[in-house]
Image (cartoon, rainbow, N blue to C red; front, top):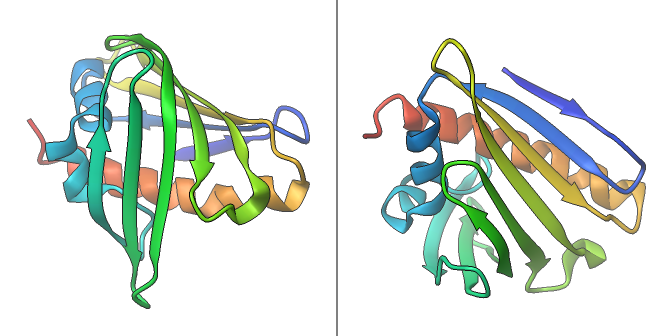
Length: 152
């Protein structure tokens, strides 16, 4: 189940509970060998995952749409607390949505052993840019949940 909560007009918060331990959710979110199996919205396939996963390191992710269009995003890791939080810049390489913002992902262990996953992205320059990201991220988290059922 995914809940989308808009905090301010220029912010997006999506919360999801994954039926998996926090360490596994963190690993699936951060390791290229996992990301290559599920990354991207519903109709996209991962093309390449390049990352230097450390504070100050960069990432560059490519996806292929079902129409054959390549989409790339990149950024810099600003903060990494293993199994707890990642803060990174986010930019569409083609300048789509005129978005250049900060993404904060947190991983919280619940009493049930499941993981509360919080995805926060801000600031957005327009409501349209913010809203255009909701469906993509939500379907990406659906793919992540399905992958977590088989991941180790």
